[in-house]
Length: 109
Ligand code: 2BA
Ligand code: 2BA
Image 1: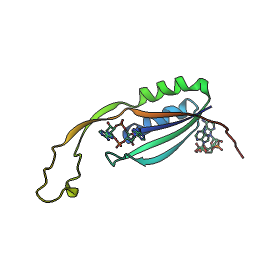
Image 2: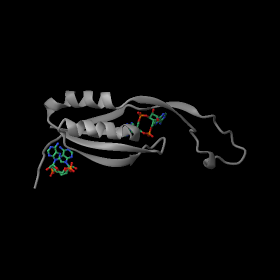
Image 3: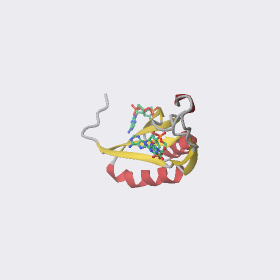
């Protein structure tokens, strides 16, 4: 069994969770915040059997589209007076980030 930690853009959350429900996956949804952009994103915990992993990856890939976003690397209010304010940079965001871990034990009480 694998525990998949999947971080997705909030805009892709509904599409992905609806598809997972339709396909019969069990999962937990956690509201989270990206450390870099400091915007809300969504973390899904999905416990799956090993043979379901490939199908799960393809659902996530289809549901989550990468996009580009302009960001100010240094928050304006954090810059000291007179400091050089860098112009916004484009970063790729979205798609999905997945961590797959082996599960030693799954227990239900
Ligand atoms: P349980 O299986 O006892 O799950 C309780 C909660 O534990 C779930 O809430 C979910 O947040 C988490 N959970 C369970 N299995 C998980 C897994 N493999 N990976 C990650 N998180 C997991 P809900 O999703 O709201 O589900 C509430 C109850 O509805 C479930 O109780 C189960 O009896 C039923 N259920 C959930 N998904 C189902 C599905 N795809 N098909 C049939 N019944 C489902
Ligand atoms: P954020 O931390 O808000 O990052 C959003 C996007 O900004 C990232 O997209 C990446 O393109 C860029 N980025 C992040 N940190 C950067 C840095 N130190 N320097 C330059 N660019 C940076 P993704 O890589 O697709 O990540 C989307 C979200 O997934 C992240 O949101 C974070 O919440 C999570 N994530 C990504 N990698 C992670 C990791 N290794 N561990 C834990 N969470 C991760």
